[in-house]
Length: 219
Image 1 (tube, rainbow, N blue to C red):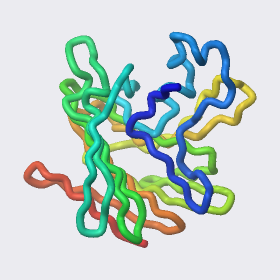
Image 2 (image 1 turned 60 degrees about the horizontal axis):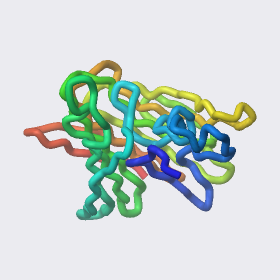
Image 3 (image 1 turned 30 degrees about the horizontal axis):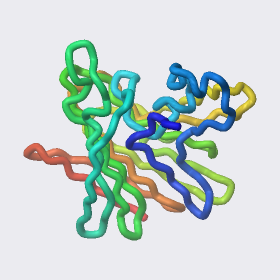
């Protein structure tokens, strides 16, 4: 019952799922076959994770996880470099990591950092079954009762694009994909997005002397 969902997460507010992976709700012969990861639901394409050149977590992958905490925040950091697999001449990533941090009395900060040996399109993907409104630098998610804003910033120009899931069962309502993807192939990029429940915030990144600083303002 393995899904390629490493680095993924859910966001639940007031008992309502605002961000979620797309799960299997109709088992077929192919679900248990050697080609199960060609199906949308078990594959990484339906998960809230990182993609390099259109591909994500490889087969039989693991990540290294460490707890992190500081003034006003706590969470964990995941090193998924090995999990991104290999390409024709070596590892797909020099580094691939994600930090998920609870910022006290504010919201959730997700920071994705990718460094590659050859230029690549880098994407952070989220999924929801709620209504979504796409802005220039943020996304608004509206559930039946709950609301959430996602503010995004990156060290390279990125696009915020809408996608639609491809459920294996044609009768199932497709999910909405939220795609934060680099405008062009890059050698490295840090993407930060801040999730605010029933509020509005802004996030900004700055780089100096090899260090990246995240600044959050607003509610």
